[in-house]
Length: 259
Ligand code: NDP
Image 1: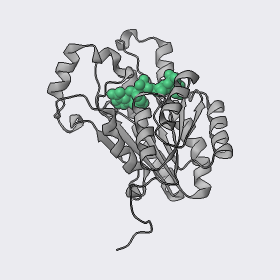
Image 2 (image 1 turned 90 degrees about the vertical axis):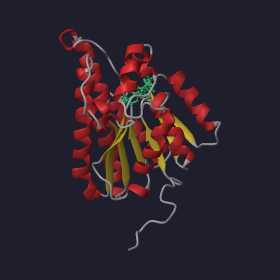
Image 3 (image 1 turned 180 degrees about the horizontal axis):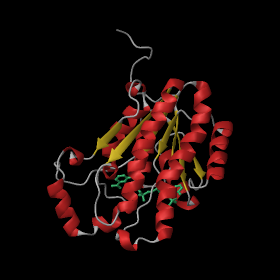
Image 4 (image 1 turned 180 degrees about the vertical axis):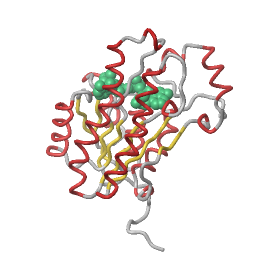
């Protein structure tokens, strides 16, 4: 049996990737990993200063990299960002929907404003950015969309029920995207990290009891390193995953595999 695409399967040479929420943390690590496999990168975040620092840092590795400051909770700003990338830089081949936030509080006291910010950032933005990108990808019959899900797409934990709700919804939105857009030549998959010591998890990193729980609960017995997400991101962004659609790939040290 032969395939239409050449080797190496994991090369991203000649591809352009937009990574939302990529001034730091998981988004930056994924951007760096895609660049190391040949992709040119467009970074995104709201805060212009940290975004420019990230752009300069990635450019210093020899990567081809641009940046677009944009709040992805604003559908008009998202449409303008996608148009400016496509018209001024070139086609987006790969979209990594990564921007996300956390807010911790007991559900009975959870502030309504925090609920609105969480759902806007973690869920609504995934639809806005994916739809605007897909409208460009569909006529080209080519595009890869990777939505960052979470172990919280599967598992509830105390004080983060709204976050869990958004990540469960992103998992199903990913399957819906694949169902609607596979026939147009797109692949839409989810990448679901376990626990990584980024700023989003500041409160947990400082909590020794949590680290003790994590060491027992995760078969691998430790936090993940953000660089350990790169292999999955490259796989889902490359020709290596050309017949993978609507799949959620957990990179979690085995946490969702065991009770
Ligand atoms: P960080 O807090 O380290 O980084 C979040 C990034 O998103 C920043 O660049 C931030 O920049 C940007 N961002 C936040 N809101 C917006 C917005 N409205 N528009 C554009 N950019 C935005 O988070 P992580 O790297 O930890 O998380 C990244 C993703 O991974 C999230 O979706 C998260 O839910 C998910 N995840 C994380 C896990 C972990 O253990 N850390 C586990 C499972 C999933 P700025 O504030 O300047 O906009």
